[in-house]
Image 1: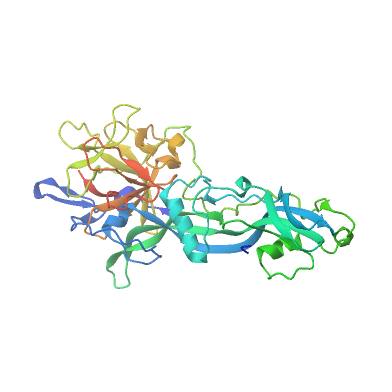
Image 2: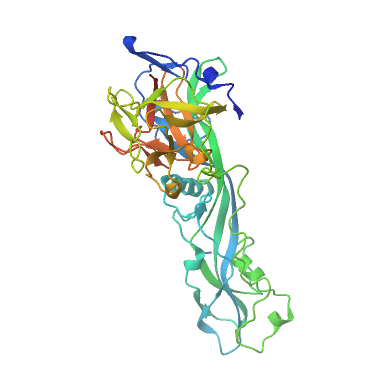
Amino acid sequence: MRSTGPVSRIGRSLAAVTATAAAGAVAALGLAASPAAAAPTGTTAPRPGDTCTAADLGTRHPYIKTTEVSSAITHFKGWYVTEGTTGEQTVSTDTTTVIAVSVGLNDTIETSFAVEALSNVKATVGLDVKLEYTSTSKESNSVTWNLTQPGYYGFYKGTKKVTGTYGSLNCNRTQQDDGSWALEWTEGPGSGSFTTFTTLEEGAVRCQDSVPADSIMAKAQALLDCGSAAAKTDDRAGAAAPTAQQKPDRLGQRPAPTSGASAEQPRSTGHSARAALDCSAEAYKIAVPGKPLSWGAPLLADDGVRLRPSSIFSAHLDNWRLCNVTEQNGVLEASLWNWGNGGCATVAEENAATDRAVLRTVPCAEDDLQRFYIYRDVPGSPKIGVQNKYTGSMMGYDRYADGEFIRQYSSGRQDGSGTFDLIGV
């Protein structure tokens, strides 16, 4: 048995943003042209304060803030064994506790961010926990055990339940004590809770057995209610009526959400009215660094934002304004209004939980699906990473090609294709 406060007008936030096309020099958010981005960081899980590079601006990683490990009995049946009924027995147990794997408010573990979070949990607690969506209710309830002694037994299946909280790390510029700037992994907006569990173990335990404290077996023994008169009887065989302790407990299996909305599923504020936006006078291209393609908004409502070349025929579809800008801990939050079609960038609500969902434009509204966090390189560089507020996902693209969609990725694009240049036009 295996045991924020608002920025005082966008003009002040972006006052240093200028463009001098004739000189070929650009500045964005107080930044000027930068050297080429370095390669992405390694595979070691970053921690707050670790250094990152410009290629990491379009990525995010989870980090584990708290963990709690507890024994849980998922299936149980009290069973009387008398002389003559020992030997191998197979007992159908009752489901007592249902544990489901979850990260944030989304039960489906389908994104790289959720998988990475659970992998970090595994490394943190040193247990082989589930890294994909599953539930203990999917386990067979049958337990087969060889009984050598008569007595009152608890047939059980149990697991180590692991719960806790995580934060979201994003690469952003941070001012150092000497006044210089550096890129560091900092805790970004949004956090959440997780639940997972280890492989189920099964067995049978009697009241008089000596078992390790805090073990799954001890948890099962506690369910036997060994002090009761029924537990002490020795004149019956077969199933015992469940006690109050042994009855199903399906409530409260997921930890309560931590303060603040989850990065995976913050609250949407609805599409009821067109927003009255306070937009910057400046317009920007959101371009692939060192290359001619940039974000181009669609003309057709059922199309998405794509990488497009800029030309005199672009009809301002490649020009974006930052609206209703606020700043907290050095991270800008803004709506992205397109000059060409008058819409705001968004992820469609029905696709909010879908990795690689296409970025679109819709009529502007007060809605977190239309709000984006902007992570910036050190002053002197126009490089940024863009994150949707509602989904927590980073914007990027599958490959560099004319017409390629801008999509959301839960952890961003680790090859640096989620880092863009914000260029004043």
